[in-house]
Image (cartoon, rainbow, N blue to C red; front, side):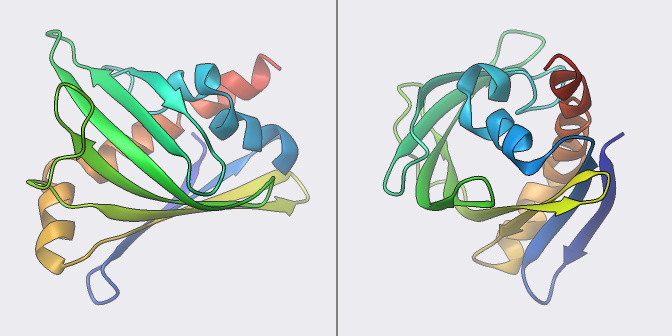
Length: 162
């Protein structure tokens, strides 16, 4: 399992998940930059993702959907706010309707990913910032923390494939 810690900070309104991966930051960056690799881990195993658009340049947009075991599709989007390849990525992350258009009935989180070289490879820190405590609690209750932990657990196999 790649996840070494998870922190739910209700005062700072954020979730922080730290993973350690046996690959250099340049290689780990590819599991974010390549939509086919991203599809292999974004979402828990029983809710695989399909990326329709994927542009990691600042101002770029990403759209995707995850398909549940019963065929249900949950759509999402990112608006990329900053990139520093292969060190960091920042994006707004939200829910979308069936046409892939952003919806305002669910909270938007701010995601920030850092990739730091360590002696054994890379320490990846994913911080999700929430607009309110209610938003944090709502998404945690929906299984966001468990889902992200399961999703991140799939990255080792992708890195092993080269």
